[in-house]
Image 1 (cartoon, rainbow, N blue to C red):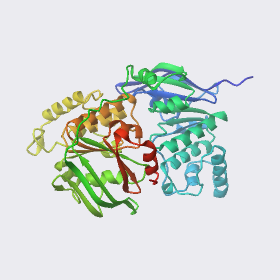
Image 2: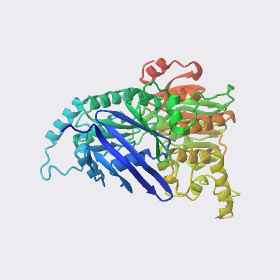
Image 3: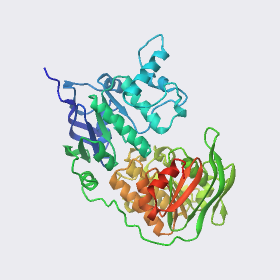
Image 4: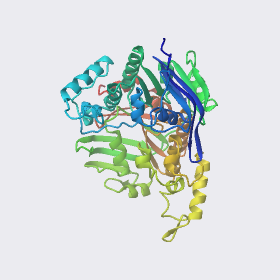
Length: 504
């Protein structure tokens, strides 16, 4: 009897949440030994579908077959028992533990006597088998983001998974780490494993996928098509139902006076080590300065010292005539600094509060929303509804919990709140990370509009294509210092890459 060619078949899957039909009778299949890309706008239902397959959600209707047999998947443990493992965009690792300790954490066997040396040997064997270099005894906090992702994949392989789901796996990786991941995935499928690849990076999909399925508004609009001969524009049109402009119209304009200036700034990271080492940088009105660098070279700390979230040990930060050094985040905002943080739901928003509450966070103390010591809720509703309309935020209503929105719409809430206060400086950290092509286009257009309105914008991103597309000037950060700058219009990508690696 021949084995079925499909590793997974999901038939007529339905999943409802209050007020939302996330999956509307969806069919999806994954063949043995293939990489199947699952595409769609934020909120299209693709992550919900895969969370059902991974046991995080239970389908309201439908059937799942794994290797031709009916599978009752009601928990992640059930999924693993069926050989299914999901690697999430946000890793689930214990920083203080070793690679091996994280991999075996939660396993039922062995019950009483732990042979750690044997487990380390098995981890090393699997890592060599799939070309994933990582030391079994290294602690997680010592590893780069790319290495931590390898640990998450090894965790699933150690548990016997032969069906892997990767949700935005390259969102936090450098180009080199992404290439290494693709090599690993191809090695896996060559050995008979199957991969579902969720991504918004269409170049990656064209490079790695054997087939593509596209979802829109909870339904499949293109099922299992071959990407051969297709372009980014073709894939984008399938995703959003319209043409996407990848080359944005950036008007030529001369930047104005220096608005934000950092001089010889030093700051420590969370481990007490020096993260910024005498960093100096200027941003002028009417320009976007893009900061390029490999993750962990001080980008996060740079954004935090400007916005008052991290103290400066020495040096000076000025906003025009104001000295920002040692001032609180509230004071710095009042001086005219807006902030789009890296962590949308953790830092940028109060995820348990409504869209309206989040939109008025910056202005609830000021008239006309403030009325003495109370809030004019009618005015708060009017202002919030206007922002929802102006910034095209897709939400059932302004009372909806902001954490229930898609990634693109949560980002729009932050941008609407920050931009509507008309800041002199906007610090935007990875503003399009994890967003689909339509939402990315919308966010980039908003940044360019602020530039045309003479705002000074500091754009921190690991997407070099994005930096080159909308920045006026590229500043490269390495080991907590700006090691070089160049105009974006004639930037030398090879030179930028060398500077990112610490070589001029």
